[in-house]
Length: 198
Length: 393
Image (cartoon, rainbow over all chains, first blue to last red; front, side, top):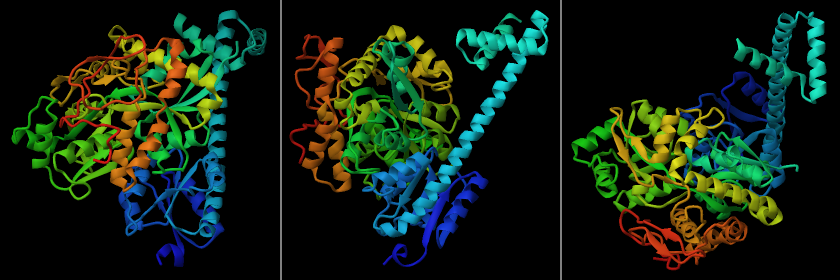
């Protein structure tokens, strides 16, 4: 039979961020004996896939190049099949878990389920972790940006009304409470208004 | 009154306008809907999120729900097309090198004569010709296969259709991985503006009236959520009617060009909406009537004959049974829901839900509920007529 049935599974991970790619590779290595390759370039990776002939391809659900894989999967014939289908067509549960984690997997048609399962479980765990970290990072960035806006609004109030820093913050907080809005929203309204009046 | 929140996926393209307008001009709010538009990175992402319930509805390539319901690509789940969001709107472009060769070979530069332009292209291109399209299941691919196939270029030995994400189309032309493309606006014009490609034909010159994008939901969702479904369909239909009024083009271009949507110059959007495209780097303009159409000619109606046309083309290429494919396609396009949900909005309803495709060479009156419906022209470039009842030929 083919490589897929007899030897180590060949897995290609498409991910241009090096740290993220390494996390995924580590996760896969812990799960079993696989031959893992990372493809970093966004454009022109079709050729790499054709050369590598992987049994499984893992790619971020949000990667804009996913449609290219979709095209490759359809173009492949049984003889030169790089990737064939999106996860397991029969297993909606697994597919749902993969999508929640933000990973899409392309798997050579006919690969036995018990060989795929550990790969997907490991991929789902790692991609899930990465997307949680990404969300936390976004939340931190947003919090920082809000902090800055509040500081600017405080500065504007201190100058315009001759308030101390603490008084300016109290005024912001009270206004937000009275209007049932978030303090960051009130601050950003003040900053916008000040820019318009400048 | 609290609004019903609907998650709707879209790809930032000019033909996502009916959804954008439905939200931005308040047509959705009037129906009690908080229409959340989520830009998506790829068509695979739209399809998978829709299938697994992360999205309620989506802007989708017309062949995707049909292909998916036929079991081609992706998960084996069925989708419904509730209405057509846009007709036409694609362009065919070639590398500057190929454009020069075509001009030397006497290809007409009229952006209209599909047969002559196609023959010239076939004569001068290296075989196999590699053409980029946004997705394997797309009208871009179908129009290309139809056009070049009818002129004698055989796939896959002489024609390779390759998937390239539209934002990478210009780059792929520059790198020489593709020699030509068929893509939706604004991406054709973007490639021209980068100076690496020329536009040779609008999709409308291959098939005068081709369904391009549809409003899609999971099969069964519409019946379970009939109130949200009819609200969404009415809002989108009113948006299409608004877009169909030429007086609104400038406003539409302003809204669409914003950072939340296309993030593009409003002039480029306006040109597309008016069918006045710049076809090469020297700025030559070609005007195409009905380059893109949102409303006129019953554009929004999901004709089962259009679904059957798409399904039989897909079935032939993939070696599937034609009759079965046609049956799946008929269940996938939902004129029944369209009639139920849009009757109260005052939409004119055609007497039939299937028709001959490619039989009208001019605007012609047809039987409808108000008697004011005009269809056509809807010709194929080679003059063939598609009868959805006689599909085995």
